[in-house]
Length: 401
Image 1: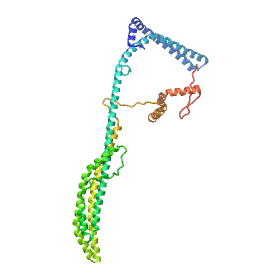
Image 2 (image 1 turned 135 degrees about the vertical axis):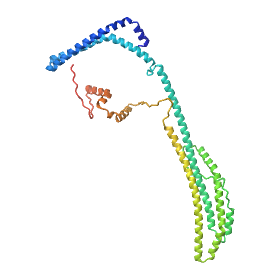
Image 3 (image 1 turned 30 degrees about the horizontal axis):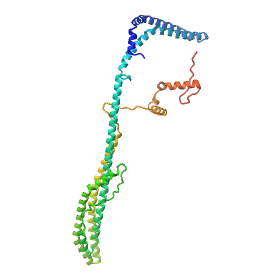
Image 4 (image 1 turned 90 degrees about the vertical axis):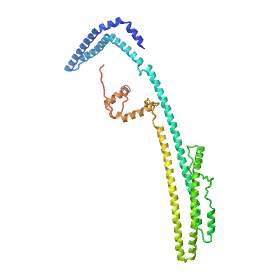
């Protein structure tokens, strides 16, 4: 391989030859110009004769001789200009070698090696950034799953608490509704003995399925944290509502006793009307309490739903951030195809054909597919195997030997 130093030595050690070549260059050009002119004139004269009289065996032999003589003339012309062109090639090679020595596109140049080092460094930074983003996204997704599970657990415990509280209130209502004139004192004593303290050991079994992506120990900690936070609220609400229910029931007992006595002393028709009136008031009081209870539950349900939606949005955001393209500062990221199976080229060609190839002209496709066309033509000429397809035909090309 010619290096800049060896080429420079060769040029500098043959200065006399260089001077001689330069002196001979004008004469070589003149000789080649005269040869080309005479050859062209002779060929045109033969063409005119053939066009005037038509091709004959004698003219065919003259044409073949002319073509052979043209080849010899070209060889002589090449020999005349060879010293000059070789000198130019040597000079051009010297300059090209100097340029290639520092060209970033040359694989072994310092610039190319530095660029590769920068590429490797940028790739390493990008992988680190991707790993960091994936780890952060995984952390956020795990946190979102824990928040969603916590919200579901909170909602489940609230529903079970409300069911428990409702059952206690309904038991008091049933006791009062079942009261008679004879059991008045018993009911009053029973109401006074009902505790308003919520059972601090209350620990229902959650109906929320255990999540598969949260460890069992973490899930247990979440359930415990939920109860630890909700139990004071449950105790406060239980005491408030039970106290209100017990006191309101005790306050209604005297009037209910009077109503029961009135019903017992009244005629059948008046008793029926009084009983219906009492039942109506009881239904209204019960509906009012139930409406207030349902309103509180609806507000808690809305809060839980907002909490779950926030957790879900956080999970989706983390997932989108993890799957998105990572950007590294001062680095351009592109993708290159690597084919590990020959069948992959069929998919590549199919994609190219659908997106671009089918829209090109026959001439453009012929340039692109030149190697494939040459192969198929050789296959037809040597083995007689032809392509059978739409728009494909074979035309004979005759050349004289």
